[in-house]
Length: 252
Ligand code: ADP
Ligand code: MG
Image (cartoon, rainbow, N blue to C red; front, side):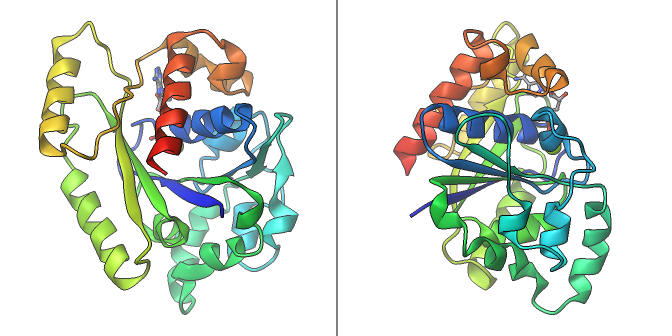
């Protein structure tokens, strides 16, 4: 039985895409079949895996009923890692989806026939709590919330947890929080240490032990179209994402 993870936080720039790509790559490297679905019109996960952002069919075509999930799944050149690309059309899906009845279940329904083939399906959400993120949260079993280790880290988390609770009650009772993940942590700064302590105090059971350091290799890997573990397998960022993959698998 495969597990579907949504990587969500309505804030932009907190490390969602970086976590989605690199977690998927670590899972694939461990020999499990992983499927990454890029739900963001910016297509950063798609491009970060070296696939052009006008690739078709995309997840937009799946959500609008013009393609099946099977048709949209493509290989990435990395063994065990498949991708459903995003396309710029997704920006319009935020307007179109709410007009369709019961549209919040579209991604879940499209995944039914394929999710068993993948031990892990990872959904990279856009920076909003709009219809695309709702589709991802309805399709997901677990959510991972990246939290940037910066001032204002906690801002918006209460709203996000409220939304998760609402989706659990109304749309997807299976949904649980896998964990919050501190990202771009700079252990040399007092600020990052303070933010980490504060987030752990607020959410004692929710925060992953693994912390993702701010690391140049992690930041530059997408410009080479590859995950950091293929860009520099021995850097601190690669080590951290391998640790995270183990922790995610252990939490089940
Ligand atoms: P989101 O998907 O939440 O908008 P991204 O994953 O795209 O956030 O990250 C925002 C920016 O920060 C990107 O340029 C990314 O390369 C960079 N970044 C993310 N994580 C790290 C890290 N651990 N170290 C250095 N740069 C990072
Ligand atoms: Mg992103």
